[in-house]
Length: 470
Image (cartoon, rainbow, N blue to C red; front, side, top):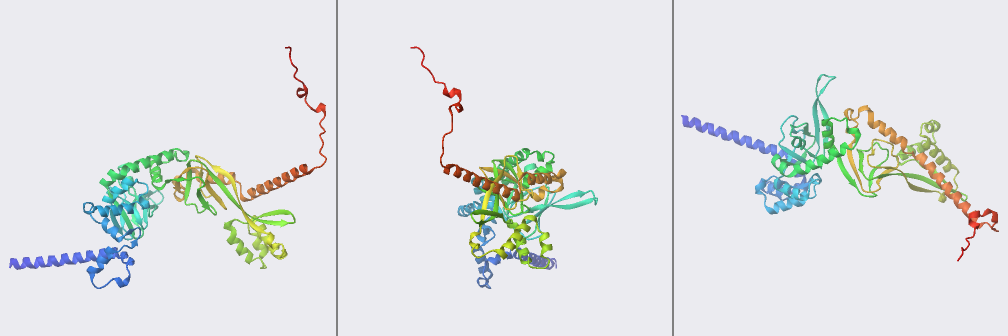
């Protein structure tokens, strides 16, 4: 009787174990069903083993890694063959998330890094927990938040602290500072990650990251704007900020209105020049060249809408609401279309003039949202800049006393507008034309005579040096 009861319990245990394994397999397939998008439907048959073999042998990419490379990364470090490690070395050499590390460290990471996939809504790091690993984002998006006390609602609230996108690293701060996790990271989409455990991090990555971390801290100390920041703010800034190098004549920032700047630039070394592009219309009136400033590129859409409505009855009301420069350009364009003759049409042409209107030297800051109509920032020589996300910089805790708005207002007042630059451009053309005309008149003047008299020559020049006694 006891043996029969024991046999039934063993049979029931096996059923439960089989059911558990089947459910685990189903969950694994659901989490990795996005792999099937790389495979054409006709390649999938009824033979399950053949289908699995096809998936593993596929070389097509999903994200940055092929399925074969993911399979290698899912193996244990001691099971990877030298050929597989060599294959991973070629892949790691091209990954943007590992670009900050030397080539030797990447080769060693190929022996120990693991691949992980997480679907949306998974919590990777929990605030207050002890660190176990660091992560590199290959594909997907991860939201970062922190629980803080809200003095208004008298309760703890979850405050967003940005996102982590492909090419970024997260989870290293707890190791560098020897503290628990300071934020909570949750996957917003399906994510592919590279995972490095604590022992491998301390052996391979920590020396390089600590050196870069100290360099970032030193860069922040060079600006007085950050003297009043707390340790948490400086730590968060070091996480979000980055340092970029720019070669001579390389464009640093190009923007139409200035509102689309993603980063604020702090110049650490070198010098940047501010190039203003003037889009002018050149027209010949007899022998005289006339220039007219055309609207900025950002105003073209508004101009085209206004031109379509210029013939309506309420055109006067419409024109009165436009900016001054756009209104004058629109009226002249409308009158030119009505009065222009066919023989005068070929004489008009549009020209672009690039004018150097200023410089940003070491210690300067730009990209705070100032007006940048048709303006470009270009490196005059080798330039190094620290880039801080502008959305984070303008948060309340980092913007004490509206310091960044005041700097923005100063930059807009110090750098001349397009209208002032165009006026100076016309003044320079008029001066060149006058100088050329004056020189031509003097050279072509006839009957030139020397009216210099002896009395006009200084007496010092008239004294003859006599010879002394022999």
